[in-house]
Length: 274
Image (cartoon, rainbow, N blue to C red; front, side, top):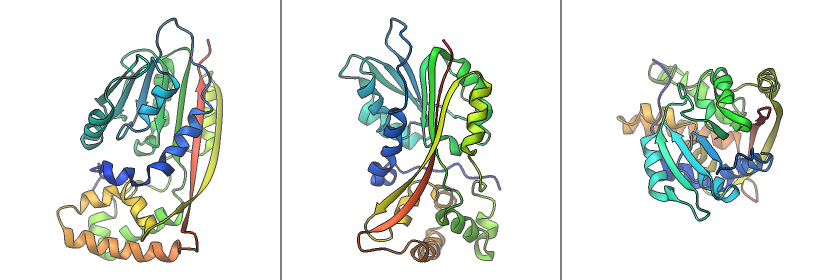
């Protein structure tokens, strides 16, 4: 059974929008000035999701022509409804369906950016040369991906899927334990293509509140393949969530100010030579 193509729930994903948006803002803070081409910047957002962070690009580059690409009809519908159209600075936001596994830039871009999406694309680093070649001289490729696949939230999920009760239905349905590269590997790839590159990692100590907040978090992201696989069997889905909830409660006990959920992320900014 191949890994699942998740069905996404924009409302669930956006329940933790503040924590999910912060890494994107930290990434944008390290993006240098885009090349001066004499025309508004062309920007591609790969894996744009519900469009909330794509819209932030228009704050930085008000007259840019920005296109968000995503594979999820649910996410794209939310993005188009909420954000598509002319921007206040004279630019434009558009959204298109695309599978990043075989996405080819349809035009030269000044910035290609991706926020917490490439971990869903096996072998994504192999696409970097084509994407970098599609940048205008001096153009920028910037992305961030989760680097927490060895955290209890993910380890426990993989172990639970492999238990006898769930193995036949879910054992091969998740991503492997290393769907992203280590920072040094990304750096080597980007430098090898002749780019100036800045690669770093950050672990955010996120304080989540509410009942079973870590479970609520993963329902919007890493748990989506399982929920998709079990969506035709509500009783099985409820039983799985109950088992996983108990494991997460032990791994992430609440404290006096909420539940601390450490989350490591890997960042990269590469600039093509002029």
